[in-house]
Length: 410
Ligand SMILES: NC(=O)c1ccc[n+]([C@@H]2O[C@H](COP(=O)([O-])OP(=O)(O)OC[C@H]3O[C@@H](n4cnc5c(N)ncnc54)[C@H](O)[C@@H]3O)[C@@H](O)[C@H]2O)c1
Image 1 (tube, rainbow, N blue to C red):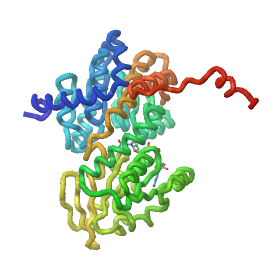
Image 2 (image 1 turned 45 degrees about the vertical axis):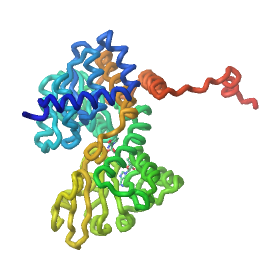
Image 3 (image 1 turned 60 degrees about the horizontal axis):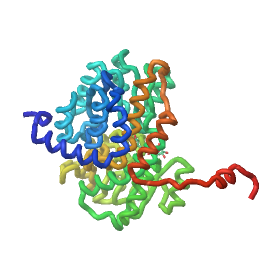
Image 4 (image 1 turned 180 degrees about the vertical axis):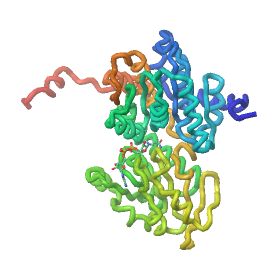
């Protein structure tokens, strides 16, 4: 029996779904309003997201609002098979952990050939394939992550976008929390689950000090690591410096680091020339969207010996005799070696996804092809839902204070 059709796995997935749903009130409450009205009745939605318990809560919300959902995974190694089995009882899904590159593309293609009206994507692989397939039936969609937005902006610049896409990643209620605190915690979680080593006292090199890198750096410091930051942007490098981190080049830190994590969205930020200088026992992981940040291809071709020493830990013996360790094959370590972002963070990202999907469904006829920000009204709605979910009360300004804020008089 294939895993996706295994009822015991589906039952385990259902429990994980329920656990996540209990901690995703912002999404659940926002979506409840659309359940009665069946706002998405008859809308066919193609989804390309990491198949996690949090994603199953988004899918559940879309189905409750009336949508028909078709899903493929956003990474060949990130699918939780129990969640895939559970989702198979609720919608159409093509995903399993350990897909080959070919399987991965095949799964995404299956979704597009089912003629979805809208696409929810993470990394833009489904949007790109829909364009390659000239999928004229797609009315619009959304994009979850920084790398996907970068790719879509490049397509927009070349005049290639065929439909409107909302850049969910760029909502403040997404990137300030998901990219920073979500990836911060789950990346550390992935490294610990894979290695079971101590972080305290280790030299921990973070390559890229954007939203994701910031989160990883502060959480690594919280665990007692000495944090080193590599960053080409002058303002961000200054920020890292004044935050108390050592800032410098990867060529210098290569010799110093015990653990390296990339989070840039760039390719080849750790190259073989750096790996050759690393200490025996150095550990490398990636938190950026694609597995291109650490040059694994060259490492594969140069290594004297490669073997798996633990789940998600591959040992590479270099020609100089040193051994270095790559986690999760250089793919998103927080999703492959751990479970991705916690539900309390994903409730905001996915509340944005849900609301943006409803917005496209209501407005696609008047929207031109192009990349859009999450509408301000939607952002405010998500922030209010998140505050209520966290049980946070905002201070109220007095009338006098409101006037003072606008006045030049002391
Ligand atoms: N693993 C996850 O769950 C997860 C979650 C959110 C985002 N992401 C992905 O993480 C990556 C980073 O996202 P972000 O939101 O932090 O983007 P960002 O644009 O805020 O940050 C990227 C940073 O990398 C820096 N950088 C670029 N080239 C570099 C180089 N050669 N060396 C060092 N630094 C370099 C940039 O200057 C920038 O500061 C993207 O691929 C994004 O899609 C992953």
